[in-house]
Image 1 (cartoon, protein in one colour):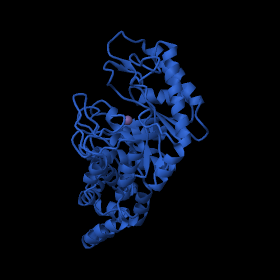
Image 2 (cartoon, rainbow, N blue to C red; image 1 turned 180 degrees about the vertical axis):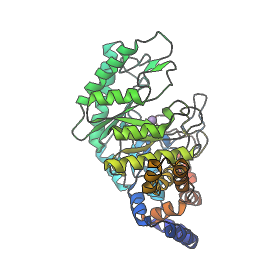
Image 3 (cartoon, rainbow, N blue to C red; image 1 turned 135 degrees about the horizontal axis):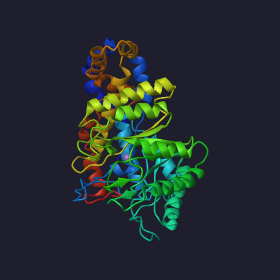
Image 4 (cartoon, rainbow, N blue to C red; image 1 turned 90 degrees about the vertical axis):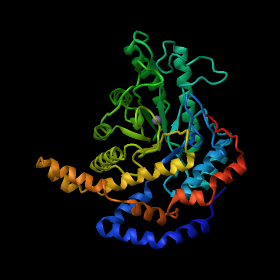
Length: 424
Ligand SMILES: [Mn+2]
């Protein structure tokens, strides 16, 4: 299904008076409001193709019905999200879950929905049917050169597919590691991984980037070969200027200071991309901003400060992606909520009085520093984000309109109740 412009207009018309009142109040408070809105309009967050169906857990999976059955239907779903919020103008594909049959047709479909292809994701954490060698004991780190070679070739194939779609980045997340002490020689595992990544790096086209994603644990529970930002940065530095670290919010040990990691990676020019999600315990893959909205704001505070210090364009300088997957919510409603939370945190970070903060820091005025940050965090910026969305042609309240238009019911009518998104 596609949402018609008149349906969005009618929805917005109903909200107009209330929105005007709330936006004018916010605009009067902030002299730089127009600058903020133009940044919000440009800021786009890529939707991962694997988040459009019910993710499930290792215990079970409860389909909500109407899930996309093909890459085409996944792109249509992201098109619906983008129509509603005008901030989801990119898709992040996962190979082999989303191998296109006809590249030109897929590109055309994405273009119809005003979507571009963000980073491509390779997969050497599962064995695929007909695969010669198993990844049970790792892929790029494997003790057997033949397994490493197979994993390298898969990554190069993903680059080829990305080129055909107009993507310009590859994200490598490795499940490689060990489950028990003594299982692995850490140094050899690192060196094998580095050599493998070097071969993948050599296959990158001009203008392409490779993002090395790290994760502290799971599925391996003793060691992970790219376990933290230090290890990722080691690889990225050794590989060269096209290699960057990718930060996934859920991939840290509990209470890690992610905002500090972000700040230092930006300082080093090595922060390449971001996977948004939220968590209470581990890699919970919950909706962005649903658990720790203050942390999300603090991360954006460092992102904005660091990008401005380096002259990095907020919209295009880094890869902004969601990486989440759910068992209990409608995946599309959930993604609308994630994008909204990201936009709210970004807006609050844009409102931080940086000149005043720099003075307070210089004067060791700790209480004032906190006042400045929390003033921005406690500002209700919902009307500002809504105004940016309205100016882009989106819906005032995306989740409300999604429900009013009975989008899920329509998708179930089109696709059936018992559908399973490919790859899940
Ligand atoms: Mn991730």
